[in-house]
Image (tube, rainbow, N blue to C red; front, top):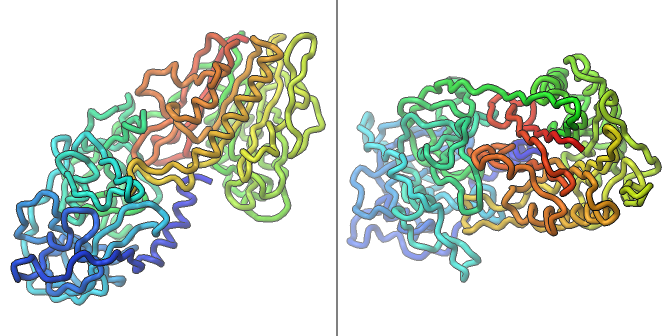
Amino acid sequence: MSRSTARTAALTVAALTSTLLAVPASAASAGGDGTGGPVRIHDIQGTTRVSPLAGEQVSEVSGVVTGVRAYGSRGFWMQDTAPDADPATSEGLFVFTGSAPQVAVGDLVRVSGTVGEYRPGGGSSGNQTVTQISRPQVAVVSSGNPLPAPVVLDSAAVPERYAPQGDPAAGGSVEGLGLRPGTYALDRYESLEGMDVQIRDARVTGPSTEHAELWVTVEPRQHPTPRGGTVYGGYDRPNPGRLKVESLTPLAEAPFPTANTGDVLTGATTGPLDYDQYGGYHLAARELGTVADGGLARERTRRQHHGELAVATYNVENLHPGNDQEKFDRLARGVVENLASPDILALEEIQDDNGPENDEVVSAGETLERFTEAIVAAGGPRYDWRSVDPADDADGGQPGGNIRNVLLFNPGRVSFTDRPGADATTAAGVKRVRGKAALTHSPARIAPEDAAWEDSRKPLAGEFRFRGRTVIVVANHFASKGGDQSLHAAVQPPNRSSETQRHRQAKVVNGFVRQVLAVERKADVVVLGDINDFEFSATTRELTAGGVLRSAVFSLPADERYTYVYDGNSQVLDQTLVSPGIRRFDYDIVHVNAEFADQASDHDPQVIRFRP
C-alpha cells in the first residue's frame, strides 16, 4: 500500500477524533502571568513543547485573529500584539471550535476555555502535540485590526541542526526539554507554533498532491538535486529547511495550484504555522503565492546496445483490472518511451484479477495481459511473464489485492529457463548444472515460509539466458515503513521499528545469493525492486554483507540518488544490487513520477545495463 492510500483512511479518523486531547497533568494553575495580570498567549505556550497550563481553564485570553480554518479541524488562530522578550515562547495559538468559526481575520477577540495538547494521529503515533484552547467562549471586541508582522522564514531564520537529542529518562522524548530556537530547527518551528509566518520565492521540493499540499525549502542550498529537489542522504541530514504549505481557502473557492519539484512558489505566502501528523510543521496559508513553472521534464534512458542486457524494476502502485485504461497506457508508455523497453522488467505491486475485492481470487493473468497488451500498443515488444501466485491474504498490501512480484521479459532478446513445480510455499534452491549455478525451480520464491516474510511480499527468483550466459534475477518488495515515527516526531531520534523485519528479509536474500556464489563464484545475479529502505540504511548493509552484492545506486553522484519523494525529501527506496561477477554496468534512475504532481505511480523506475 502506498503512503498516500494509508493517509486517506487516517485523515478520516483524524477528522472524527479532533476533539480528543492529550492532556497531561497540569504543571501550573491559570493564574495569569505571575504578576496578577491576565493570562497571555505566551504564558499558555511556555518554553517547552507542552503548555504549563495544560488541563487548566483560562479566561479572556486576548489576541488578533490571523487565520480561520473552516474545514477539517475547524477553528482559528489568534496572536498577541504585545509579545514578550523570550524567543522560546510563541505568541500564537490555535482555538479549536469544532464547527465553523464565527470570527474573521483582523478581529480582536477574548477567548475563555480549556488549555490542552492535541496529538495528531493519537497517542501511539509518536507525533508532537499542538497547544490549543478547546470548548471556547469567544467574544469579538473589534474588527478590522492590523495583523502582527509575520516572521520571515528563510535560511537565516532556520538553524542547520534539526532536533535536540531526546531525554533518555523520558523514552527519548523532547517534549520536556526547554526550547532552543537558535540551535535546532524543530525548536525554532515550535517557538513559532500558531504565529503568522511568511516565505518568499521558495523552491518546490515535493510536488502538489491530491490532499492540496506541496513542499518547499527555505534553505535552497541544502543538499539540492539537479532537478530542484532536496536529497535525503543520511539520518543526520533530514533537511531542516523543508516546509509543507497548505491553503486556508476552501478548494471550492480556489483550487490548490499544481506544482512539480523545481517549480517556485513566487511572491509572499503568509499564514499561521501549524502542525499535523502528515509532515509536521506547515504553513497554513492565508495568502498563497503563485507557482512559477520550472520546466521539469520526464527523463528518458538510452536504449541498450545489442550486447547489453537491460534489467529494470518498476513499482506500478497496485495495478489491477479495475484501474482505468489510462493508468495501464501511461505505465506502458513509461516502459517503452522512458525505460527504452528493457529486456527484463521486475514489477512490484501487481494485484490479482479483481484488485482490492477481498475474496479467494489470487491469479493475476488478466492484470498482466492488459499491461503487456498496453505495452505492445505503445510500440514495445510483446513481453512474456513469469510469477508465482501468493496464498490468499498472506503477503500484505491493500486488503484483497494480493500484490506480488512479477518478471516480464522480451522473448526476442532473452529466454526464460523454466523449471516448473513451485507454488506459494515452495522455496527456490540452488544446484550445479554442468559446473554452473542453476535454480531448482524457476520461477520460485525465496524462503517463502521464513518468518521474515510474514504478511509481506516474497522475493521472486527467475533464471534467464542471454547470449549463452545465465543470469539469475531476484525481484523484491520488502516490508513497508508503516509504524515508523516521523522525522518530526516527539522522540528524537525517531523510532524506526519497521526496520527489524527488513533486516531479516535482507539477511535471507543475502543468504540466497551466497548459495548461488558458493556454486559459481562469478555467477551473474541481479537483486532489485522496492527495498523500502535507504542506500545508507542497515537494510542495505545486510543485503551487501560479505561483498556478495553491491548497490548500483552508489555509482551515481550523491545528488542523483533518489527514486521517491516523501515530505519534500528526495530519497532512495528502490534499489538494484549486483553480484561481483557483474563488474561493469551502466545504471540509471529514470525520473518520470516521484517529482511530478501528475503521476502514473509514486515510484521512479530504474534500469541497469551490462554485458554478462
